[in-house]
Length: 628
Ligand code: COA
Ligand code: AMP
Image: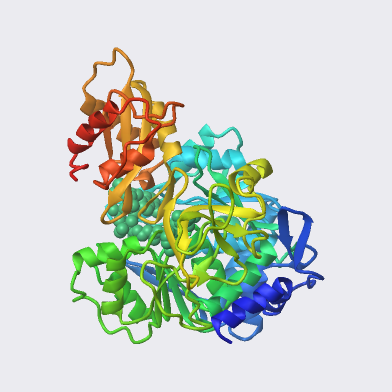
């Protein structure tokens, strides 16, 4: 079937389409129906089924006699180690860990936070939770204690599983002190913490609260898979919203299994026995879906890479991993390729890559230069695909496993079955092809996408459903051309994308506002050749503040690192007298971005005092921006 036929088959019978996809999954009790619209506009899929994620990702492959196949390859240039875990070993390890968690009281529905670097034990912890029906929430290692504390208070975990440390090329990330500080800061306290001690740094355990990963598993009875309802939350993953409070995206169990499994063949064109690699981090949605769950559900070998695109040791690291482990499909963020391209512009370090079939890019807009570089040097199709933490898999892609569609550079190609993507004007009316507007998806969203936010149904409705009734609002703006190709151009909210990481300028402003000298502030994302965008702060100081501006800026940079973490990558701020605002008091962030990026801009008709923009321009020029 062609892509058009597959898409039409979904349009003609959406429920039949997903019921058929569900056949590829092992059920304890099959669903009697696909969609549950009883609480529309809140939707669920496969509600009355009974199922277990870990069974589908691990045990069933052992039962199918593929126990000896590698499930996980840990390739860690930062520690100089490599390690293969077969499906049979993974089953043992996960069942034992789940048994130990169960013995300490973890049951179906309990939340467990996982705070770990790129080690196989992170995946094992996720799978052990899934085995018990416990709901995990993985927190990225680049977040500071405060961010971890916010998540602890929101999802109130019974346990936290953490590693003693993570390893960045230039430093050891001390997870344990961060964990201790977060627990001190949080109002909610977990019953216990499991600490995976790494040899690079052995952490001091807190008596009565902490148990060591190996010791607490000693002599336990391995746990079987606990069946859960189809709509049971598999995990919560926090993502940036417009305010400092992150949004807890809920992932429903059955839809997640069905949809991810479908994507592996249709989009990534891989199946059991193939090696699949997503060079991301388990702390992000790409890591959840395509380092952990999807490759394992499909019976592939997944690679857990603990290294960087450059510097571990060089810009050929990705190509070494691909050739050494015979990777068939490879997924990364454009920023990683830009880092490689910067060090190897002519592709001299790229060898022949005989096993590689395609490269997939997501997380941010893939710029044409990067796509051309990859096409020229990797000599495989380069697929830009668009998705979000909320959806968990691609909304738009070039589905190589169905049909290789012609590429239009700058477009993540076409909507995938399940997604009726439309571009709307402010009044919520679809616009004509080629016209820019807000990108929205007609409800219901397909299986596996977020049914709600954790403990925040009203916020879910307000953030995604209320603006355009009958649609899910993606927060992205763009257009669809006459051939149905999508173009994602910008965010419609205050979310910025730094090195493929989604960050909230609102959250950063809350941190800056906490500095004793700062009266008012704004954070914008300015264009960055490597990272796509880079945050920049504007600080208006309290009357009477006469401390050196350099000191205040340095303190703000430090504060951001302490409060949000190194991942915010906040390194620049300027002091200004006033911020440009509309007459109703809204800060004109968009205009400031255009000035900073030396793009053409118009004086906003609603501006309160146009002279402020001259001051802003001068401040930006003082740090090398706004040169146009
Ligand atoms: N734990 C702790 N700290 C982390 C971290 C982690 N897991 N990941 C990143 N950091 C730190 C970095 O060490 C850096 O700290 P520094 O300010 O002390 O140098 C900071 O966070 C910013 O990191 P990053 O944005 O990754 O910048 P970088 O300069 O270290 O590396 C790239 C640049 C392009 C190589 C890197 O951003 C990269 O590989 N990006 C790919 C991103 C990706 O895969 N995103 C997933 C979406 S699909
Ligand atoms: P995250 O939830 O962290 O995955 O970030 C999702 C956001 O990243 C989207 O809403 C887009 O703004 C951006 N994004 C992801 N993939 C793409 C892509 N292929 N092209 C353009 N923007 C993208």
